[in-house]
Image (cartoon, rainbow, N blue to C red; front, side, top):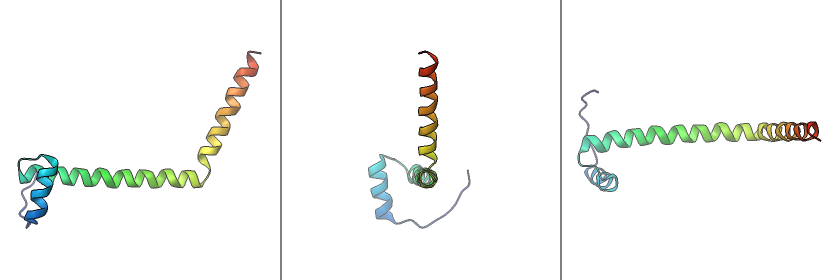
Length: 77
């Protein structure tokens, strides 16, 4: 962990502390940083899923799954 001196918006910090239930500025800033990183990672993951959907990967996987199910059913008939 590093020590950094920064100027913060006191009103925004107080509101963030209240909403988070945080008791210290350090706790609030660290939680906000972790939350920001997690949010960006979720957005990136959603974009990757959307791209896969646009390429038709999910339809291909669903069709393959249905074909496997059909083959298993036919094997037991």
